[in-house]
Length: 494
Image (cartoon, rainbow, N blue to C red; front, side):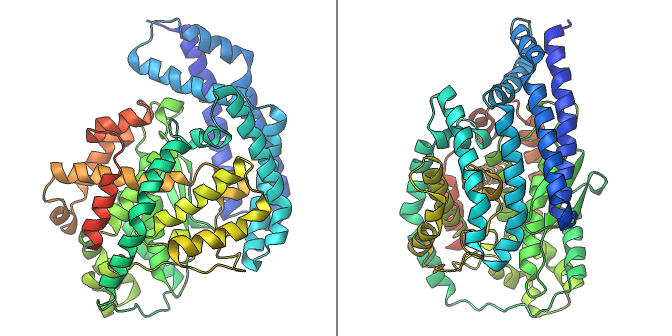
């Protein structure tokens, strides 16, 4: 049976996906390859592309197609697809083209200038661009809030994690804050008596890269449909058919680049295994940023930092970086489970990481709600870093409130995805271990198929067929249950 209105909507979203493809590759190039002098022209081109996409989504013909499709006798799968198309359409139609263009231009300016401003710790210089980004984000938040009845912050949060609310985050994060500081102290006391050998550098970048590429192959990355490059801030970009991941290297520390690559490969495998016959439609794309982060953290935290996986790759580390006792499997496991509060979120250990996320969530929520202004961020940052992690960031903008790329382009509402992702990942692996009791032995022996097969069947192939709560229930038998995350941390670290 043909459904002409539904097919007309599919045709519009297929065209949109092709524009999104170009925008994604241009964005990757801007971050990884573009010479600095190209930024103004690139920013204008990217804004033009955003306007083209916005025009597609706001065209009266698409509205008519979506309305008529709702009256057609669609299958369950087509109804799910229509649900996701309507979600994208509704969001776009709440924003005027003027705001879409202004946000794109301001974000491009702020992010590009931030690269050098961060190096210099130039907070005052950064503020010049950042105030405009904040003002435009608040304007967007107000428009979305007026239409949805949500708070301004919840309206932005819904872009990244549909169905989540700040009230629910307060409950989840409030619970974490009640037990995390005590667990961090307990683990640090326990580890104080453990012998840890430090790896002796320097570690040549070309050898770190070769190690990373071999680990990517072990993790199933398809090099015919993606590549590895370098950027100021590691990320996964591109599209499902052409995934671009980046990392950054330091010649005195191989740990950062290696686990950064494992993390981004988790994102990439999700993209590469999305259903190719649907990937041009919203229903065939990643479910949410929390679910996306659950894939990178399944790879990095659940798998990558497990003693079983580190014993598997210890010979590869020695092969590429040289023979030394620090690279023995048991010492690698101690290196990658060492708990030490520090400045940098992306370098944080698994246990202190949630504190970095909660801090950012609390600041950005207050900023979008108008409870604080951009100028207030450094003092709040210093106060919360001291309270949550005992780390003094006063006067250190570079390694403090300027360290992340997310706020530079107005991605407010994104940060909670990281800890939600860690919680989803812990829940997946609790389910997986019930199904495969000898999972660790199989990983240590080089058999990663149980992990990939489970993720493929339950997450990757499902894309956005189900709303987030239903996806997690189908995969694990229950809604998000943060108790699995706490149990995982206690089991691994105590």
